[in-house]
Image (cartoon, rainbow, N blue to C red; front, side, top):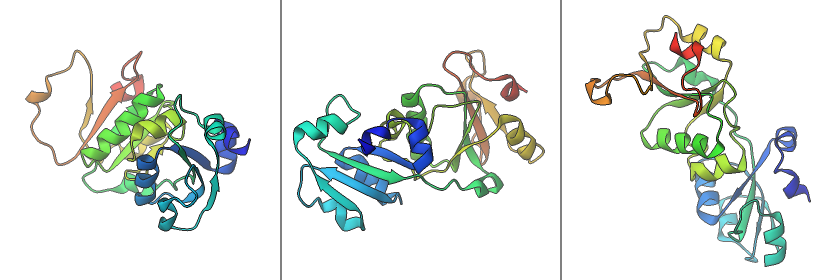
Length: 206
């Protein structure tokens, strides 16, 4: 009952805990520095527990199907502590950021996180009510990149006021924009990806 309650954002935020499912995802989260709280699986002694202390429970297939948030339960589920956001990334010299501007779909948000991680960006800045970082669909879509790249949820006006005048090139993705091949290589940039329905917000278009 407690694990299933973490399907709701208000309960996750109250306890600062989130759910991840599948051995690879759980392993990648642990390797990325996530702190495991509880592990539930079909195995009596999962090898994942060698990574550090955590409570471990064994359940049968029916119970796993009951607590799983996926259509097909992978047989192992972990409850993790929230990551501590590192706001110092906003002071990174020559930053390479991805700005998620109003991304509403959790799967899309997770995809942006893992893509930014793959390309070696310094951080993702989430503005204008992006999908929640610890939504189970976001977590699964990151495919283990969660914790490997800082994700900051900030007020858009405050963010743009803070970075204004620092000489960071801002690039907005737009269907009517210039072709990507026309841009020269940049050591520093902030790439803005707008919402699925409305594109870039007025704050970003400025």
